[in-house]
Length: 408
Ligand SMILES: Nc1nc2c(ncn2[C@@H]2O[C@H](COP(=O)(O)OP(=O)(O)OP(=O)(O)O)[C@@H](O)[C@H]2O)c(=O)[nH]1
Image (spheres, rainbow, N blue to C red):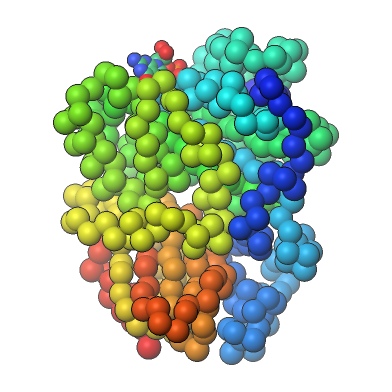
């Protein structure tokens, strides 16, 4: 198994700076901590005291748990970390094809690519290199495992090496995982490794789906305690590309799209042949930016996915009027994460908080939870709470009951 990285500059390009690349909508940095309550209460104390401060005892214990850089970033309101995109998808779904599409498109970004594949021979690296102007000597090989497990430490090392020693050479990092990789541990690397999250921010997870073969993989029943990688790859995605549409009928495509939507009601989906999608669909996604979550044009559509949730219990959406008591929410999420964190792949919400004119925006991955105030509610606006959970064996009744308990 191999992992490597290389730099690629799109052909007819001007070099762009990270500040140009930085999305103006992302006014505040993302904050991450394994403990939801620490996070929420920290935010209350430091940034939005006027709006949310109400419990000095709870607030006081959070300040020391946050790294200094977050405080600095918050102080300046700038997030200068390099964005990273994870491309995942089952074996042969078209990940390398998508990568080549991105690398040969005229977007002007300089991209560092980290490749990880099974086998001693680095074929994908060569395939990508053959489409680019890079010198293959630039490619650094790591030959001992899959990014999601055995070479996770190497991923950290590679990322840090890139950002510390070669930061001036690229604007964006793309990581192509192996077809059998579980995205969770790779995502967690960005959230839980303090050094990595200091320099790199996860921009989004893009999942390739092979429209010809995906149904078989998604339906595959695994032994107890063994995860279905295909389902996980769909569940974690911010963007899903249903690829190889030239190989299936319209009717089959519709059925598959519905199935995928049932597993992940939050991700945006596009159909493609040979991974040909707009670059904006895959880069600059802001999948982990709280502000972007709020600004997402598809948010209403995402949350209004009213069909019965998947038989696997993978996606639960809650849409409800009323206002939330933030302390209750804090306690509920703390309990939920403690009991169910392993099974909660992704969750996102826009909430109406009691005593505040601003939306409260939150999202999480397993035990990592981010939350901050968002746009102000207008006086004539109906305050609707929207919350989506994606994960394994979700108990919809329990989630709805828990949420209800947070309403004032
Ligand atoms: N017909 C058809 N073939 C495609 C399409 N996209 C990719 N392919 C082909 O599918 C095969 C696998 O594509 P890759 O891009 O290598 O897939 P991958 O996900 O990187 O594969 P692994 O690294 O082995 O997991 C290649 O032969 C591609 O040319 C498509 O839209 N239609």
